[in-house]
Image 1 (cartoon, helix red, strand yellow):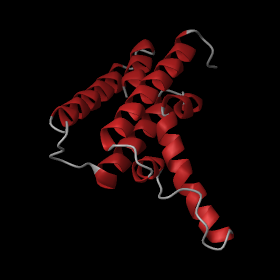
Image 2 (cartoon, helix red, strand yellow; image 1 turned 180 degrees about the vertical axis):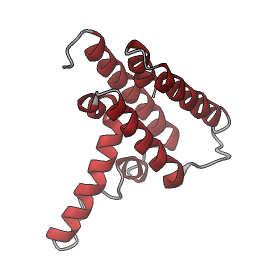
Image 3 (tube, one colour; image 1 turned 135 degrees about the vertical axis):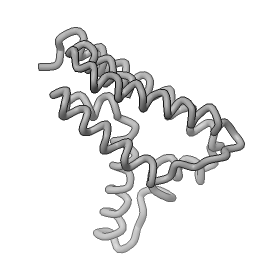
Image 4 (tube, rainbow, N blue to C red; image 1 turned 90 degrees about the vertical axis):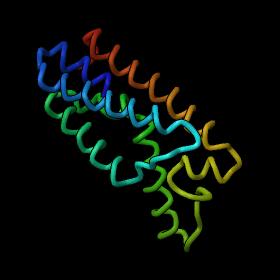
Length: 141
């Protein structure tokens, strides 16, 4: 949402930029109170509307092709679920991962939850920065 806030700001879509920054602020407040041990869980009820909102902002800024780059960890998580279900269906119940989505697989493989979370944060920061740089350098048409 931070990357899309800056994209909207550069396009002089101040309404969208304000919305994105508002969501960033709300998510930061959520994270502030969710440092381990977690007190609140977002789950699918919170993540699905955020994902849809991000997609809507991508459409409104006409940067839909940047969305898979900016939100790459989200794409990987969704893709891991699709691969797991497809594998179970067409390979007689055989799984690719211990559990889907990918972050659950990593935890069941022995990674501690905070390690998985921090890795996702780092990768998300890098991908959103790359997407923003692509937009700002005019590499996105």
